[in-house]
Length: 560
Image 1 (cartoon, rainbow, N blue to C red):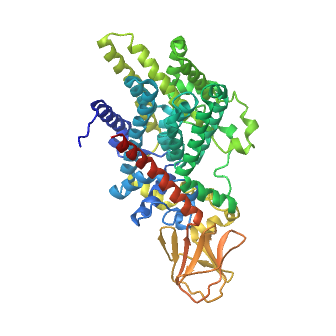
Image 2 (cartoon, one colour; image 1 turned 90 degrees about the vertical axis):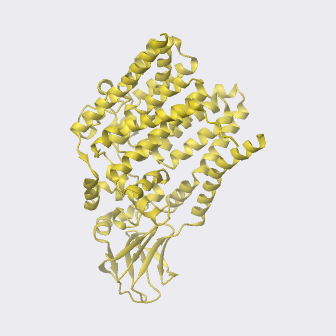
Image 3 (cartoon, rainbow, N blue to C red; image 1 turned 120 degrees about the vertical axis):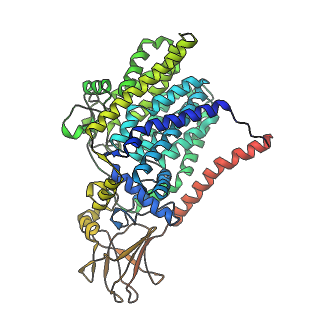
């Protein structure tokens, strides 16, 4: 059987490999990265996953190797499946810098391909798709997410926004048989970052409600049915995370991670415009500065040019333009954010600027259209010059801002990162985010000293061995019916095992695992054993993603 390769596709794939290398080149050259807000925390997550994969476990529920080995349940509350490429790179290279940069390069490449794919489906124009992809890849907010904040989950989630928005478009006004784009785009986001999923869902709901008249007048039943299929499929494709998450939230009480007032991170409109003009990558909210996170200089150019050529926009493009204006204004003090400081459905997003990922993609789409509009007004050689000029217009502000960030921010190489992780600074762990609320009072003793109790006397459980979802405490002198309190927080599905036999487990007032052994022992295993619901989630997700691959293959064979 001959395999036909589209040369045009190969051309763009090669270009996107080069573009991805350009995106990480300034840091490859230095062999260092900036100390982003959450960098060490996410590198710890990668390290934990890598050590689990080394033991052939790709889905840890509780973290037992890193995060001070206290059975930190981040795997249940913060999805890590899309970190697998980073974890594999960590195992292959043993170097955090190479892991981070190559991983970022891989997701940049995927982003470029995804954007080109969905934009081409809408426009049937490769040049439009190309410029949209490049503008989005180098968009200021995407750079902020990875280099300033090192919000790795959010950065990866930006890869899937184009799938979600195209899927939403397809269901509302396009080919509603393309509902899988919405389903799997939302599922991939859920398997990456919960808050990004929440924001994307809110955006889809608002746009859907505003578009209800259009849906009613254009094959309403077919579009609603497609939406239902997308919702069900999305749930199934991410059930491996959703079901354990819901199970724990239903059976335990956990505090909101990093609670804060959303109004604190709203910026005056003047500061937003100024930050767009200087393509600012800083957000000195905590230090009283006037810098703000925005869609950057290119975003501002797209808005200004869009206003000039607005009459040449289609109806869809005009709607997108107005949505972009709203999204750019959204994180400013023009909105009364103080009213929402205590509204849990709103303040859970923490930062109002988080929707700028959506704004960046929509502005990139309009930017691609504006480039096409300009190119079409030139002869052949003028087209080439225009393309070169636009590429420079995109890349120069990016490189200038990255260089400024490099000059003003501290850099870390691999050795410095390893030393920082050994130091176990509390700010790099965020241990208070995902443990039971009543355990916060003893967190320092548990995490720093592994302090527990035997018969109400303090005991330091420092002789332990970590395995996937398991910590084994050794060298103990525990007698039958002793009252034991372990430095391990009890959540649903935690079991204590002695000589292969499960023990009756309880919880003390501080949320610690307690038990009375049924025999003398010097060794105790504490293990997260997935429930039937957890296993069901794994099975549903594997079947759903397997169907995504197998069904098209069978359809292709039937056509042949």
